[in-house]
Image (cartoon, rainbow, N blue to C red; front, side, top):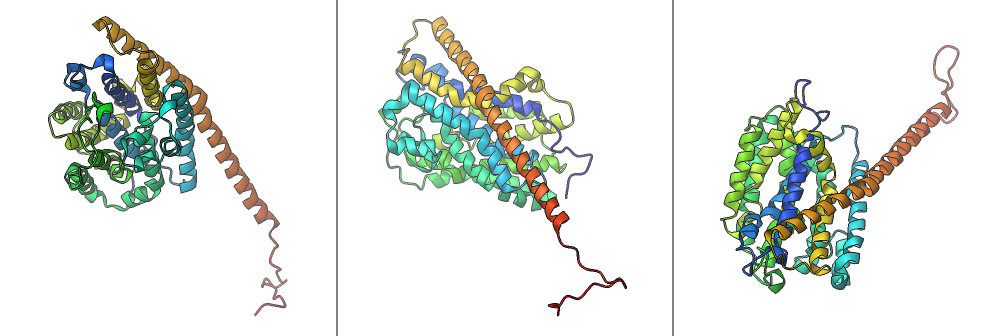
Length: 409
């Protein structure tokens, strides 16, 4: 069933979700901040700050993956084709990735940039390799772009498949995908434990856990496609008028409770199984509210701007945090005021650099691609028109019939 005029559609701006993107990116920032020596006790995640944030990184990325499927479905163009879609997405993520990859090498990561780490990282293939010194190498957060590339590659097929699902069955499909995500840790337990995260991760919630099992649940692109697919299905539910879920505030409260629960469950379930359903409900509830024109506080101008630079913020913050510790030597805070002050300075510097990256790289790359795409479309239209105008006319006899040529049957 297609959307009727009374239903929300792609023309409705998802301003609140744009603003919420920054909250997810900042949660990842706080998670990485908590792993620095200056913000950890000798027991690592057992310190209050690190304990509260130990699942912040996982949760933030899960939100991004669900949101990505939702927004791409919401904004899908009827006349779009796969190559044009892929080109737009590459223009958005790859220039930013190249700049931040080089920035990480210059500021702190050159010593660890061996070929077996740097090459897959640069090509955004690192998430396919079950080694933490590869998928978390160079610019740590870029591993998620490796998954996003797979999402973009599959989106035309997944979107067509979702559009063929009857509206009455959309909730059933969404429930099935969510159930698969929740059960993934049980499948991961069948993987031999093998190598575990070692001393280099002593202040990380990863310490002591199996690399292979964690990689399968959280890093491996085919398993993360499920989060993306759930976002696609939730968008279809809202677009087709089948949304009957909770409002924004109840969904937000459920998300907070789920995060608190994730701090207490076994590690593999804490990665995304506990929070993915609340995130899906929150994204859908927020989009439905935006589509009605009600909006939320996150739809304000400042929040929207923060959301627009959130992708760049996500890519630059880890480099500045690592630079602060590894090159500037900030490994111990003498007071709470110093700890908070340094964190605020790094956050502000990350935001400034993110704005420069957005304004100087991301947005110009997108505009350049758009101009090329429009020029290509105009050229194709001109060639089609020229072919129509120069095509030989079929001779017509005086009695109105078609002339018969010598080689006609």
